[in-house]
Length: 122
Image 1 (tube, rainbow, N blue to C red):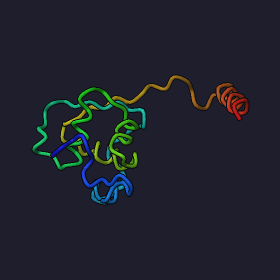
Image 2 (cartoon, helix red, strand yellow):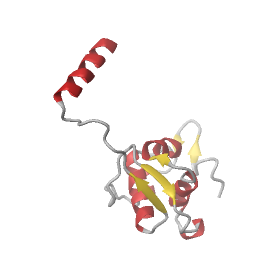
Image 3 (cartoon, rainbow, N blue to C red):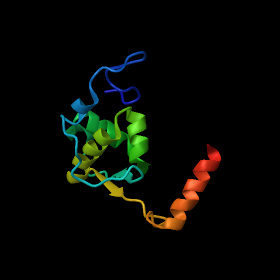
């Protein structure tokens, strides 16, 4: 399989297979993953033991990469990628590292600063 080009991709039409076919219709990951979670291969599971989409994910995880970046590279919805990653975490093929929160997202001062910043940009 050539991992440089996504399989069944048409330049004008986009993916020719529905995204949720990659996750076999599953819409909820079993492992909690944030869009900013970093994922990296463990080297414990050979590509030959994985399905095509999982193998593609593993190929992209040679260096730490975020869930959001994986979704963009694969041209799949983030939730589909999270389901694929959950399978890979369960079989030991990848490890994940969740981002540490830099600030308390419920801190009123932070929320007000964010609001002011957004209002200035608009």
